[in-house]
Each structure stands twice: as structure tokens, then as C-alpha cells.
Image 1: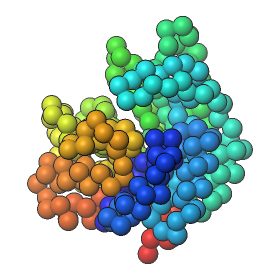
Image 2: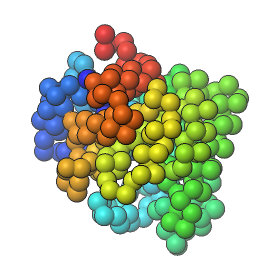
Image 3: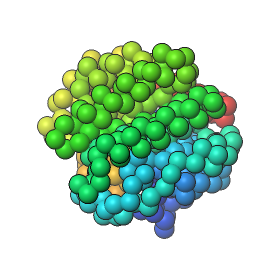
Length: 289
Ligand SMILES: [Zn+2]
């Protein structure tokens, strides 16, 4: 049994076969949390989760790239994000559903800041939106799912900033449920700072790619009870599906890789990962047992 705690079956990449994808996953013993990135995809995540009696939950939030209007041009995606401001009231209303187990994804993304805009202004807007998400999570007693990506010239800059903000909240006694730093791409020392702050560290199919020894070292060094696995589907499909559309069921390949790295039998690692996910997203427990 596994839980893909970060899936986007609510995205348009699955508009023709979302239910097939979800059923394939549930039949294969993989539960999931559908993660919103804007108000419309957050709404869809909740609606889809509510359709299933068990095994599908939702997170609601505004991804930092949607705070700006600009073209994102990446290997996997060519789209113009729609600009949105974080509306606490709308997201609070959505989070009333019992299926909502986290606030996010929210966070910082300095990678996509376009050259025409003021970097300082964009960063300030991202920081403000992140704080609003964290305030809402504190108020609703939910964990957060954090996205973090540094700039091209300094991949660590956003991680340093997000750590400062998280630390400030934790020290103020807020964010009691903590949360997860998703698709972790930084160093061991940064991962350890998150763990010290009570956070969980999420890994995607990236760890199955060649030349990712850096992540293997981190996975080996972290306490097993703070590791999470995720797909971030439709993106980042693990080997042997690299380059194809990803889906929640493939989280098995990520779990397998974690077990291999740590030298633990797969069923043992799966149990640990399953328990970890239930611990951080504790609202799930209500309808898992
Ligand atoms: Zn995501």
C-alpha cells in the first residue's frame, strides 16, 4: 500500500481519462492526494476526491508561478499561466470539504521570473502569498505542501528564503501540523533543516534518473520516518516511463528506488512511507481505517 501525496490528475493532461487513471491506481494499491495549483484546479481536486469514497484526497492552493502572467517554456510544458491573486476566502471555503487534507501547493519559484519584471517585486508577492497560505493552514490546523525552486543562476536562493519564512512560523508556534517540502531538489543540509523544523521531505521519479547520486546520499542520510514519495504527475515520470505522461500508480517505482538506496526490503519501506504520509496528512486517517 502506498500513497502518492502529490498528484495532479486534476490537470488537463488527464481530461479524457482521469477516472481510468485513478481506478488503475486504486486497484493497484496506490492512494493519492490531488494537488491544486490555482482556484480552478483546486476546485477540481476537491470535486474529484469527493467522487471517491476512499483513497482520493485533495490539497488546495495557489502555485507561485500563477501569481504572474508569463509564458512558461519548459521541456514538459508550454503554457501561459493565468494570473491569480490568493483569495483566502475562496480557498478557506474549499478547505471545508472533509477530503481536503492540506493547503498547497504554495511556495517560492524564482526559476520562472521573467526578465521584464522586477525580481524584487515578484519575490515580495511570492513571499506574501506563501504567508497567506501558511496563515490559512495554521487557522484550519492543516499541513502545507511546499513548492520551491531556485533561480537558474543560484538554485539555492529560494530554499534559503523559504526556510527563513518556515522557521519564523514554527518559532511563532504556528503551522502546528507542519507539512512537506515537495520534489526536493536542494542539499542534505537544507533537507536536515526542514527535518529539524518538523517537516517531511518528498522525492519524485527524478531519483530514478541517472546521475542523481546527490539525492541518493540525502535519502540515505535522512531519518526514514521523514521521507515521502510522490509522482508530481503528469510530470517527472520515473524510469522506465521517463518522458511519458506520469500517473499516481508509478509512485511504486519511486518507493522501490528509496528501498534500494536504503537497503531495506520493499514491503518494509512501503509500510514506513505509508505511515509517514498518514502522520503528516493526519486528516486522511479518518477514512483510511
Ligand atoms: Zn506539483
